[in-house]
Amino acid sequence: MLFLLKLLLVPTLIALVTLAGRRWGPAVAGWLSAFPIVAGPILLAIALEQGAAFAAVAAANTLVAVLAILVFSVAYARNARRGMPRAMLAALLAYALAVAVLQAVPLPLWAGFPAVLAGLLVAPYLFGPTPEQQPGAGREANDLPWRMLAGAILSLSVTYAAASLGPRLSGLFAMFPVMSTVLVGFSHRANGPGFAVALLRGMIKGYFAFAVFCVALSLLLGEQAIGTAFLLATGAAMLVQFAVKWWIGAPQRASRPNAT
Image 1 (cartoon, rainbow, N blue to C red):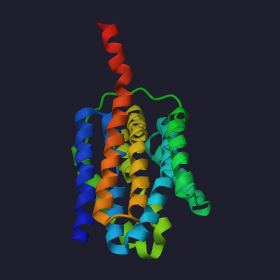
Image 2: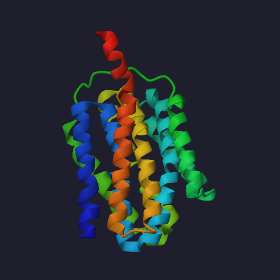
Image 3: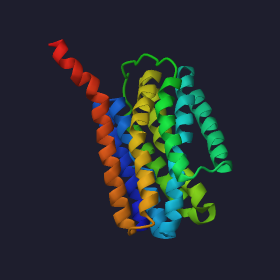
């Protein structure tokens, strides 16, 4: 059952987000992909294999790893006009440097959570000018299996290596930007840099819920059964996810009476 969880759940969730993005656009895809659809199943597998205490530490470090994802996103956005390969290389190098810093300077949960919230608020202002979105010349239908394969490889590799990596590195690598690299890379190639940057902006809006998920999970794993902890943390994340969505749409709702 654990093997099937690692092998099938993450790729299936990636496929659903990809199809939703093709239907509703990059902002929705980014918002959905920031939900813990990759790190959540990985942390669940780690908890079932390594125990609740191990997973609690891993979840706290997964939270802090959001800072590395923000560094990845800013680096990609600022290099997007240079083409997908160069932007991806710059983003991955920036991410690796950020992970090295986070590994060397650990942040406790009480400090990591406000640091992540501050990073989420500041990061969009560091993106620079957004390239104009270009109509997709043809979204490549054959990229979906590759996206799913990337998710499966990440899930299997991180969970199998958890015992040797330890809880801190397991938590950091559970947040490897698989959604960013796969979704943004393929989208950039098919639809241009504007689409890719819009996707990254949508992801940042979704990471508020992800941060709440990690904090709740890290705290609950010490008090509740594993299944209960994950259910409660997921419920908290969903509430925040839809609250952020409502907050983002508030200016548009307020302007509708004036438009009529």
